[in-house]
Image 1 (cartoon, protein in one colour):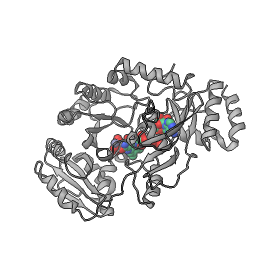
Image 2 (cartoon, rainbow, N blue to C red):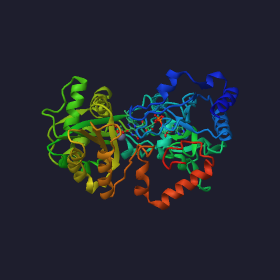
Image 3 (cartoon, helix red, strand yellow):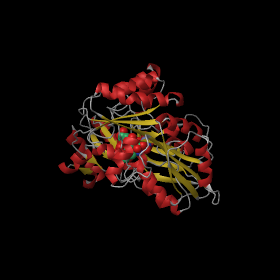
Image 4 (cartoon, rainbow, N blue to C red):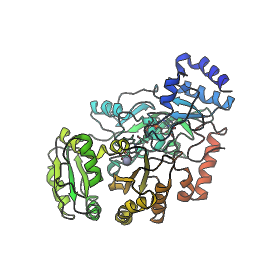
Length: 457
Ligand code: FAD
Ligand code: MLT
Ligand code: ZN
């Protein structure tokens, strides 16, 4: 069956559109985490929307399942062929249109990386509202599919809030063009572009997106502020959420800072290493606002800090950001990482941070727990290293606690295959059956990502 499908696709896409080289297949069958790996008979490389549509229609005819793939930086096992699916690598969809300066918008192909988009719009005097550490590899198609969040959600929202329009090939094989003109107001029925944001490749393959841009930063001040206790850092965050021009509000803890210091072979910029620190950034599109003074005043409104390192130039700010952004890589360097990406209500955050290390220790004695996250949004990342790759016990215990505290079991990474068992407990049976019904309507034969979100049998 698969051979007939691949022959048909080869006929439409040409030989360069169907890759079966075993080395390439192996590389594409494992993701950034190293924890999720599968097997595939082929990687398809369509060069445009029409070719993606050919692939999906052919897959329907031959009853072959597909997994759309961008940069493979997703962290919930959604981009790899765990059931032997054929992979669709979207990176050749690399259209990058000139910035529409009148609208402050741009249209981009699904395969464009975030870094490339950022450089492109910066050269035209604009900025993009979403930034994540995987910017060099993550694609805009993958970011739409996962509704990526990242560092500036406190200011601009997540991917969903930047997407004005989308082009996608639905599971039916039809091409959906939803508001590619980028109209800001368009109340003509369902928001179909919005529906695809966070759909994790289960409803359609995103081929292009019409994105809103934001004014570039003219002046910014970034500080790494230490606190004597985790509770003080959480209390400070409550004050700092109200800071004018807040651009980022991130949490790191002492053990994480020490690991990054060892990794970077550089001393932590706060000595001695504090138990907790906030990376706070204020930024304005207007120059001459003395943001460093504003930032100092905002910090002074909270609990007394245990030291602070402040940066106002771009290279110094990037160096401070390094103390936060190196955390995922440093965790990965310790071994296979078990990840929870959760949101807590503000009032429950301190209790959660206090209880998690002991909870993990009870489930997996001797394991290393690294906590960090986008505290401004109540989004914490729990990383556990030590348990066997298949041992979900510690993360399950953490997610039980999240539900008991009225939080969310996925803040920004999605459900993928890793968190499927948690979807109904989080959202309830009615919501899950509504999602499954939408899925059946847009992908009647179950060709797209069958193992993801609401698995197809
Ligand atoms: P992939 O990993 O290839 O795919 C992710 C999912 O989207 C899969 O289910 C896949 O099937 C589907 N998909 C991919 N392309 C398409 C398409 N064109 N159409 C339909 N479905 C598609 N995430 C955050 O939200 N915030 C962060 O701060 C953040 N930081 C990160 C830092 C690091 C170091 C790493 C490694 C990851 C980080 N991530 C973060 C996670 C990841 O980068 C995002 O989930 C990103 O959106 C994935 O993009 P990708 O192109 O790599 O998608
Ligand atoms: C981050 O914020 O660093 C990312 O979401 C990656 C991670 O959770 O490790
Ligand atoms: Zn994150």
